[in-house]
Amino acid sequence: MTIHREGKYVILYLLLIFSIAAFAFYMLFPGLLIWWYLFCSVEVILLFFVIAFFRSPKRVIPIEKSKILSPADGKIVVVEKMMPKEYLQGSYIQISIFMSIWNVHLNRIPCGGVVKYIQYHPGSFFIAKHPKASLLNEMNTTVIETEHKEYVMIRQIAGAVARRIATYVNEGASVEQGEELGFIRFGSRVDIMVPESCKILVKQGMNVKAGIDIIAEW
Image (cartoon, rainbow, N blue to C red; front, side, top):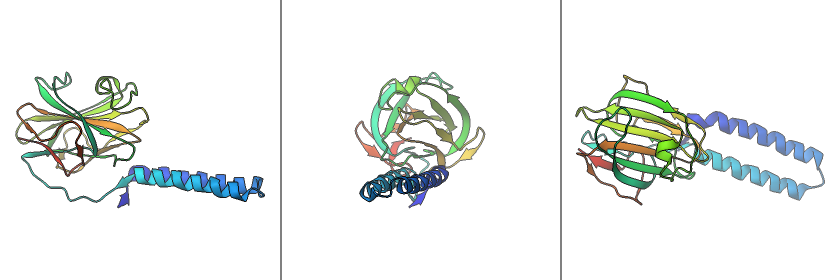
């Protein structure tokens, strides 16, 4: 288990702030040792939570060109036919994955191919489970053209708490299954749109892991 680079500076800053706060508390209220211990305990719990959030577990990614892997850890909240109305034309199957604050928030490339389109969209911050989140929330859209000459769209969507969406790929780049796509801080959602011709292997309510679980196949 390692800490993702997105969290290293956050953890260092928190450690510095918590240390200064603990020292200041001790100097200002030297007679309140019990309360100082309680204060330090709360700081340790908060620091542990942040470290856990930015964890990046090592995973063996199965490279299967006929399969589409989950781009995120979390719970399937939507499986439905839809029209993306952005870059893509025609009908697609949308699979939405809600990431709670307890999930790993590193997103991964679901299938190999070439990145054809990337677009950031400013927006609102509805709870990520809300149906409006896919339409109105802040998000970043990435479209990959596969070797099958089909398109797969991934939308990283901010939630009520999330305030930073990081995407690590660029237009024109060749990508492989399981590579890092990006990271979303503190509770969010990832939608993936796959061709209607794909066989969907997941259903609403299932839990999936990024780069491990197969959600569809050609």
